[in-house]
Length: 287
Image (cartoon, rainbow, N blue to C red; front, side):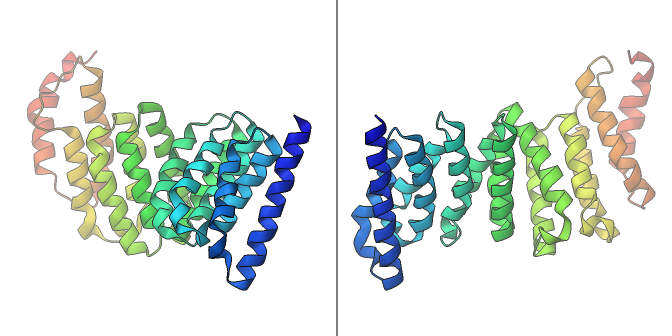
């Protein structure tokens, strides 16, 4: 009822006042039961109550480590609420759960990554803003969580994840990729790891991410790393099947990225042997 919803909201305001006062006096740890009541208030039916809970849980989260798992799960539940406005408030609060408690960042990054499957533009924008905050806090740990998600995601989520990394992470440049040499090496290792799971179309999106990195743009001695990845995607040990679209796409994608490497002085003996002995002899059989 409306009266019950009003009472629930008033109770939450009382909890906030108690917790805020205790935080200023250093006695907030004594109010564990009060914070637990805030966490459990997400089960209340009122929309305004849920939205207020979504703000209070992150606000006082750092003071109650024993309740961390319950508080995080409550916030995640609100992110999947049936009400749109509740979801927005809950998503906005996610980055604050690890602002002062970085040990929770991987879990929050993983969940935000999964939320990229949301359809509403405002929800997606808030998810991306949340991920940007996590990247600013710890780029390496956030990226690790996102790449792990790419490896386990279904096709739709994987495509959205790759697009996000390309458009929002790589496009951000040096400001986001700090410390740059370490993060660039990490990105290279992660992309190398997931390459076997990607389609030729996805490889065509991922490899330009690497060629845009400073370590490959400025230092030719790193180019063999790229050539190895291109060669691996070409799958030189597999027979070339001119009637098979995947087989053709694999060779064309690999060749497209190999040619600039050849022009910069990397000698692709194995790749050229593959073209000469397997691909070119079958050229007339292409559809």
